[in-house]
Image (cartoon, rainbow, N blue to C red; front, side):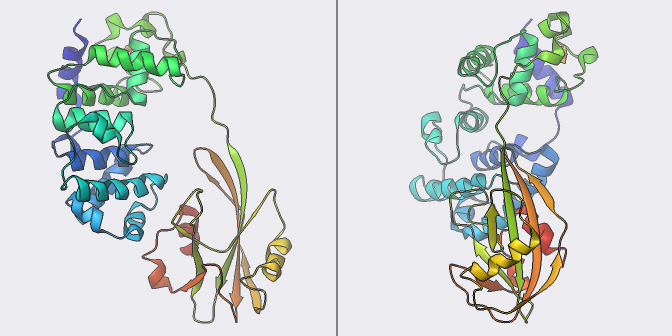
Length: 347
Ligand code: SF4
């Protein structure tokens, strides 16, 4: 069976009509690939539209302020993607005259572009023979050929990469890659793949060996770091809120949040409120407790964050260490981590 041919026939019949599929513009392809990493297509679609509308050309993105790019990205998570997006747009605009290089190795040098994204741009925009291997491709290939090599091991990655390259339609690499990913996303799904209508059923190893539920094999679970973020929401007499830009190399870098006390364990409200007295920011201030919010948990891919918020009305504040008072209108334009954004909507 010619796998690629069958795959492309299936793709022509069943593919979703998505805007980045009907273009060979490397800027739009790159944008969609970066947005869609770790993101569902329906959610990513809205962000893609927003970015294309606001930044129709890579130069528009390059010239934007980072704060606007992050604000537009707000809610997608993995903010390093947005920072890298902006950095790459600047490089393309300044050093490549606004044109993406039609060269895999040069693409790989750009911030945030790894092998997967470079292969996607190279094959889709420039018809270069590079195979993409994302989660959908791993799943489909491991089942089709009954590969038990772990997809998160060095050996496994190498194996799947060469298998994908072997199958690649050299004359039509862009469409072939799109078809592989779409097949994994729509037909050979993680749970309950649609084997009954699958054109590969007769040659599928996992189907024959009843191994669909165990393939692909994954080695280890990611270690989750547990953190405790205790936030002081400080509101002044004019209704302005105190925020600070998170400049440290940590989650939510360059986004804005409230004064934070991070603790190793859960602390009481009293401890949190008391921390104001030892915090340089408010050592001389007068305040009253306005509200204690129910505790929350925010899950990221590698972190579990226990969140606590108290709202305090402050009469006098000495602003130090990068803290700034912002009106609600100003906050509307700032990029905020999702829990902070939600909290802002709740009072
Ligand atoms: Fe995937 Fe089932 Fe088709 Fe095998 S038969 S490729 S498991 S959908």
